[in-house]
Length: 130
Image 1 (tube, helix red, strand yellow):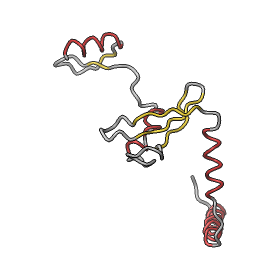
Image 2 (image 1 turned 90 degrees about the horizontal axis):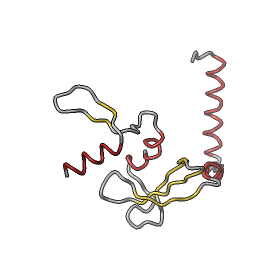
Image 3 (image 1 turned 135 degrees about the vertical axis):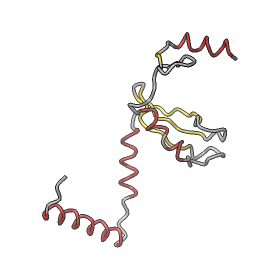
Image 4 (image 1 turned 120 degrees about the horizontal axis):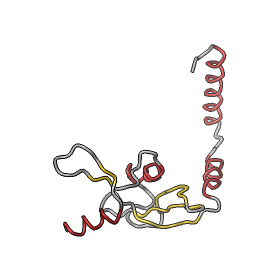
């Protein structure tokens, strides 16, 4: 993006206005809460546990039409009291990422290639080795 004198003055003016309104005591918390409600409006609330460590922080997942819409820490749970670590906070991003693996990959011993395998084969291999 090329920064022209005009765009710089617009950005500087918007920044000054925002800082001034904040200093005057105008609170945008209500607007932020309203915007957050719009995101999860009509979504089903599903309580689950963060999968990353053994602390078992409770997470509220919001699901609409079979798709994950949002996640947040459960404020009523005594372990995390609504707070999540960095991994737990990134749970939604990890789930919706394009880089997420959706099929099992297998690399044979002494091979340098990964092969896609189906879930039945993978679970049978795990069960046999355990």
